[in-house]
Amino acid sequence: MLDVPAALIAQMGSVSEEVAGAMATGALGSSNAHVAVSTTGIAGPTGAVPGKPVGTVCFGWANADTVHTERLVFSGDRRAVREQTVIHALQGLLRFIN
Image 1 (cartoon, helix red, strand yellow):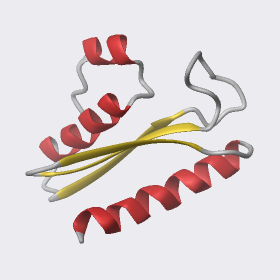
Image 2: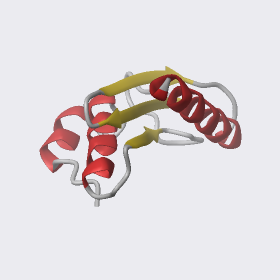
Image 3: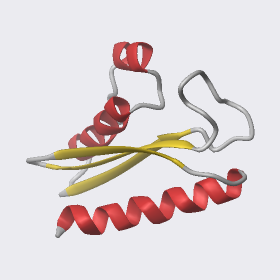
Image 4: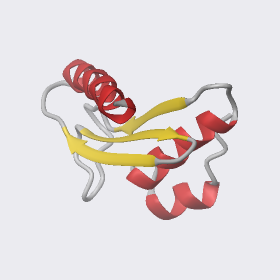
């Protein structure tokens, strides 16, 4: 559905700004939406890899003209990371469309 190239995931890892941007762009391409938001991350408690600790989340926001990405590291347990992810994604969407 999102058409993220497997080669991009293999090269950058599934938790990367590049993949988040491709996810948002892919969501636009497969829908009638004017804007899309994507997240990919490691909420924990396991899954950390070198350079990407638990709490790492990458975001993508896209429209027909622009793709913006961001990488943050949140603290807390799995639930806290997921809650912070949703809040940041929606706050970022408001900034992106304004």
